[in-house]
Image 1 (cartoon, rainbow, N blue to C red):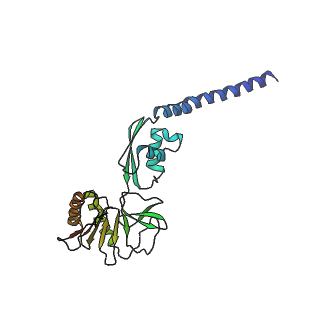
Image 2: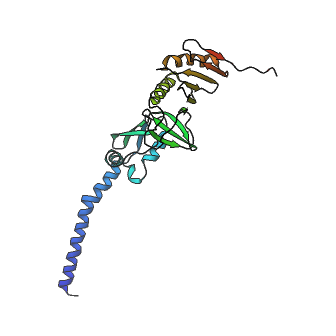
Length: 248
């Protein structure tokens, strides 16, 4: 190989080396600094009553890149929709380069129906939002609805659309009174019966159930585990039927 050719090869190698050095200085080093500087160390989760912090983290952080504060924030802010059962939306707030706050907004579920061995959950507008094989204990099971169409993420078509307003009013008052209602049932006259485990209360048909559920709350507190059937359909007057106690 001639000296001229060797000098030419050395010159090419030198230029390549300089380019790699520049690439390292202007690209690789900043990337390494970015990864280290925004290493996600602290995550605070709030707002949800259906999941604990670890469950939310497991669903949101699915790759090594997600352990970067800025990457995680930008990913769910602009590029990826959050799809978690019973979660309406999630907001992210960067506290500092190593910490992020996650606020979870649960879907407002007012009831569920049982269909084909699954439990279908619907919101205040009657839209079926989720389905599960096992029932969630804190969501009342609604009986007596007649379905015209059942499709996930679509409105549940029943015999009377205003029944969803009735169910919403009932569940709001049930939550307010902290009543542990297992089922809400409608008969063919659209009269309501609620089952609280040991107490079965016939509430009748009315525009709102605020006052009657306030009275039922007092009955539930006084019953203290007794099995009762309460007929409250007549309004202010009602009777309580207690099961007979065996003499054996």
